[in-house]
Image 1 (cartoon, rainbow, N blue to C red):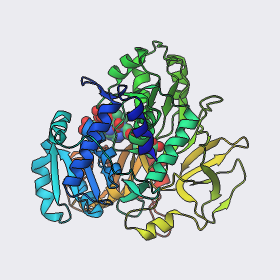
Image 2 (cartoon, rainbow, N blue to C red):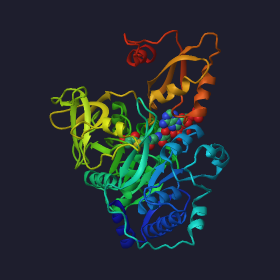
Image 3 (cartoon, rainbow, N blue to C red):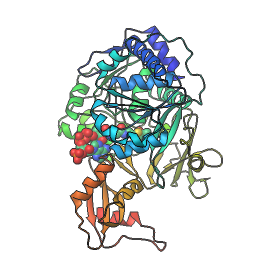
Image 4 (tube, helix red, strand yellow):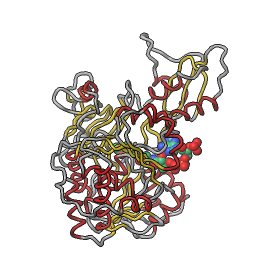
Length: 501
Ligand code: MCA
C-alpha cells in the first residue's frame, strides 16, 4: 500500500527534503513521518475511529498533508473540501458525509458556528491558524507508530465529492488499493525518480494536486517545492531556475505561463516532465509551448472516480489533441452508450474504464453506484471519444452535462437549482461558453419572472452566496424563451450555438 512505501522512504532517507513550502523551512522525510505519527495519535485521542469521516477545509498547507496521511494511517476517511465553498455548500458536504470532525481555518470560525446546529453528527471542530500551531498542538504526542499500517486494499482512504448531472454532489470512495494502483501506474508510465524535484502549484483538495502530483513525488521518495496558490510570475521564475524536473498544471495555468512569456523564449527543456490535465489542452497551447518553452506538454486524462486513466507517453509521440493510451493496469474501451456495445476504432462513443484504480462507488448511494457501472463492471465516464487504430485515444466532448472551467468541474443542474431560488428567475439554463483562458466560462440564460426586477450583477452575487465562486455564472443573459425539444427538454447544444457562437 502507498503508506508502506512512504514509511520505507522515511526510514531509509530521513534527512532528505520531502516537502518545502515557499518561505517555510523544508520538511524532511523523517520530520514528515514524525508529525504524521503525532497527528495520528492526536486523531485517536480525539476519538476518531476507523471509517470515520475527517473533513478538512484548509488552505494548501502542511497540516492538510499531515491530516491526510494520518487519517489514512488510522483507517479513517479523509474528506478534503475546497476552501472556497461557502457555508451552504460546506453544510451539505458535512451533513451528507456525517463527518465526525472538521478541521478548518480559524478565520472561518464565526461562519461555521452558524451552521453547527444543523450538523448533529459533527462532534468536534478544530480550527488551525498555521502549520506552526499544528506542530505545537501535536508536539506532546508520540512520534513513533507501532500499530500495523492498513493492509486491506478495499479500505476507504478518501472521499471526494463530485457532482452529478441529476443529483446533488456525491462522495466517491477512494480506497487504499485505488490510490496504490494509480500511483504505481503513474510511476511506471512517467518514470518518477527519487532525484526528481516537483514544483507543486496545484490545489491539494483534488485528485490532480493531491494524488497525481504530491503522492507521485512522495511515492518516489522525491522532493516537492510547493506554492500555496498558483502565481504565474513566481512559477515561471522558479521553472527557469533549473531546480525542478517535474511540473504539472491545468490548461489555464499553462495558458497564463505562455501569455506571461509574451513572445519571449524560455528554454525549459531541462524539466524532464511537464504535464497538462483536468481539461482538454488546446492545440494552439500545445504548439505555443513547444515554441516558447521548448517543451512538449504531456497530456493525460483522469477523473475523480478513478484518478488517472490514459496518458501520452514519456518517451514516444505525445500526440496533439490526444490523451494517449491506457496506463499500465488500466483497461479502456469505446462503446455505444445506449447499449454498452464496443465501437470500431475511429468511431466516437463513450469511453469506459476498468482497473484496480476505479473507485469503490459513492457514499451511501447504491443506486448511483450501480448506475455508474455497466453489467460487466466498466465505469461509464460520460466522456465521448474515439480510439485510433494505433491505440491513442482522443476525447470528443461529453455525454454528460458538464462545464470545465480552469480545470474545475461545474455541473449545470447544481447552478440551475440555486438560480431557481431567485425570485426574478422563471426558468433558466446554465451552459459553458468557450473561453481562451478558462477553457469555458459559466453562463446563465434566464427567462425573467413577469414583473420581477432582474439584474445580472445581483443574480451573480446571489449565486456566489450559495456556491463556490468558480461555479457562479460569470455572465447572465435574459431571454424570452429557451430552445426545447418536443418533450420540453432544454436543448443546451442549440443554446450554446445561439449564444456563444
Ligand atoms: C478561480 N476563479 C475561477 C476559477 N478559479 N473561476 C472559474 N473557474 C476557476 N477554476 C475565479 C476567482 O474566484 C476569481 O473571481 C477570478 O476567477 C480570478 O481569480 P484568480 O486569482 O485569477 O484565479 P486563481 O486563484 O489564480 O485560480 C485560477 C486557477 C485555479 C489557478 C487556474 O482555478 C486552479 O487552481 N485551478 C486548478 C483546479 C484543479 O486542480 N483541478 C483538478 C481537479 P473573482 O475575482 O470574481 O472573485 S481533479 C480533475 O479534474 C481530474 C481528476 C484530473 O484529471 O485532473
